Length: 117
Figure: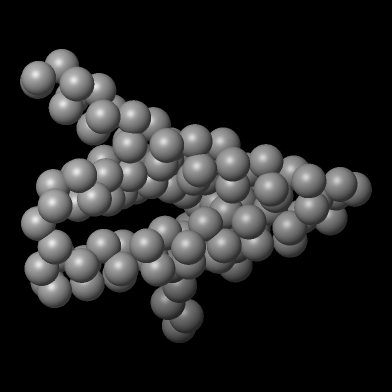
């Protein structure tokens, strides 16, 4: 008797495309949300002027996490496809899924600060 994850390719009725679907969900939904929130949080840290070791370490860990997310789950996943021009496509995916949402998060905080004053 073999137990397997219901979405695994070798499970009865399982799809062989589930890793691609997971990568698409991460690239189109999860990464932009995390990057936008992180941009907001990082801009708040920088603009607050309240630099303590716990807050600084949180921003440092958040930055490292974003780099890992962008490289492992967006860039490398796009590079693993056997498509000509995958290098350019991978860079565009990182730009659209990580960099632009991060800048939008920073912009949102700046907009909130400008409206408040």
